[in-house]
Image 1 (cartoon, helix red, strand yellow):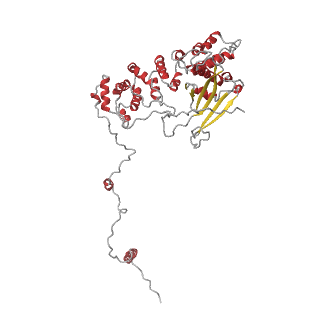
Image 2 (cartoon, rainbow, N blue to C red; image 1 turned 30 degrees about the horizontal axis):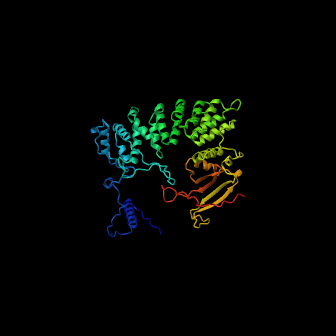
Length: 486
């Protein structure tokens, strides 16, 4: 039996293919279409269009990169300001009205054309002493100038010195004659002020050496040693010599040399207006210059003999030692034959300075001032925390120890400190920073001799006070039992 084969026509193929496609699509969509609830699209699903971007609020500017312009402090129409004279300039300053809070910002608003006349008015007005020097034994030294208070006004010295610093920067060379006296007044300010003094000196051009030296001389007399020393090196040789010989600035000797500027050094030896340190340095360096026969030149010998009668005992001692080292022993310190304690104390001052420079193996000359019995040496120590009066002197903070030093063994105690104390004597009591030296002179065998030295430690300054004098220790009353030295 023959099997029948069914043949498909083209029409049948297209119908079948369409049906298959529909079936596949229906299957892919999950079968029959069912109604669904409408959904709300999320913000992330909504595309951001250009118009939406434009609708967003702008971001605030970065405050660090976009600062608003500063508010003007001065409501002044500078085009209408009259600065033809000093009174007009001061009137403008009254309108500016600087204070300790805003002075710097106000100065930045002053136009360049107005700065010079305003600066000249400030400098000519003076009143720049902000922080005075401290005085008193326990006064704490002032090393810095105080800042102006926030309420400080134009007439406040601490604010005026800051205005003066600004004013000096505004000056031109043509302004110097108008402010010459003002700069000299600034140079006369004492420490701790130094910045303003230095600025005043540097306002003078370096090649105007006469004018600079005039300011340096004023500053030197005001005690501005560090400021002057820092500027002296800019002077030429002629003005350095003038600084020594005319203005008595001893620092200039450090730049000059004894060998190259012998005349200036020789004049310094006998210059009573020159400081003792400079004169001693001149003596030492001139005496150390080599000579053919190790003898001092006649002009130096004459100068040293004059210096051996100087007012300052340190100069006397230096001259006496230089002469003694070159064979002239006339001025070696000896006790004067007098009952005048003032003359005896001066001789002791010379002796202390003379022996401070002595070699270690040189015998002391003090036995010539001491009686045969010996020298009583009393040491008084101070202890602020002590509460017991162990030595019965009535003061729990002090302890006395006594020693009788044989005449042949007598030496000046604490000689380096004693030299400093000898510059601050009242009668027979001399005071250094740490000790008080008391000397007792008594008639012995028709002569006035040194019978006793007391060394007293000075009390500490009160920790809660900055400018109150330290009370001196009271001498021990009555007779002191002095044991002999062992």
